[in-house]
Image (cartoon, rainbow, N blue to C red; front, side, top):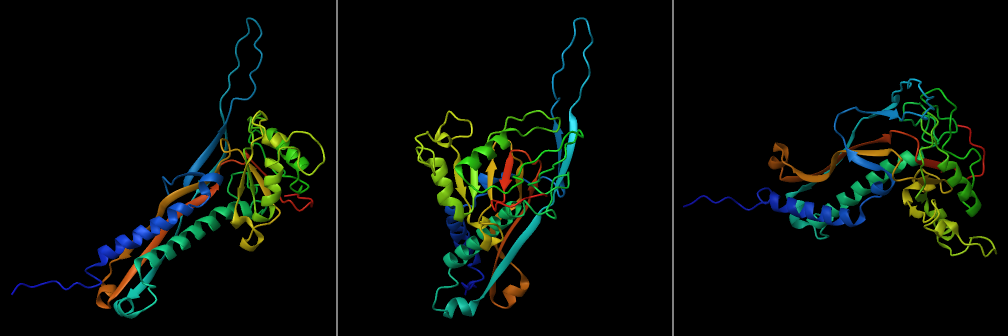
Length: 325
């Protein structure tokens, strides 16, 4: 008589894995986190990966007739080191649980979706931490040793320090947004030259969503009886057509601030997310599991965050209070 291999949860693990992966991907993709909108996303190439900054050649000097040209070189600025952090966990299910439980908790769809939601929440929280801690002097990344939002970022050439934050914590209003955009567009490089940055994204917590949309989308100037056109809606105005991004994980309940608001230039900001391992699920094939009739589904990811420059970003605590960091 031919020997047959019994069909068990162990021998069919591959088919279960496919279901786990399918439901993980199906649930994760439609609700992909906001990191693509608020961070420069790349791939981790090295452990302790270093991003070294350089700035331009500065102003172009006048050359008198018959005079020799002066020499110049790019200026090395600050360095940021990205060290990946691994996150993961596994769910263990016994053979008996799979066979006898009635609530369908161990179905591939439920486990896959649960791990997907768990992973998405972690990505959101880790990414939002960069913004929620933007005003915290102990939360640094860039080589100048300052928090992301500072009133006195130092220039690598030793020139006058600069800010990318409101020193008075201006609240989100039509007039204050004008002030913020003007401040944003005056950002310079490490040799004091304009970088020609223009904000295209207004990032807020849910509390400020209605206000942000009224300011940017109303046909006329918001909050007044004026008949003036709303410049924030005009494509002709560089700083107009601002897109509003509302992020739940910026709220006070998630460790952020309901009042803080941020401006980003997607082309110039360098707030960074580097993937070491993108979210994935797999079955842990271990001897202990086989001997005890258990199946373990592992979920993991690995990423690093930080910023390689502070320009192309602007922030306000939005509380109307003096900010001196």
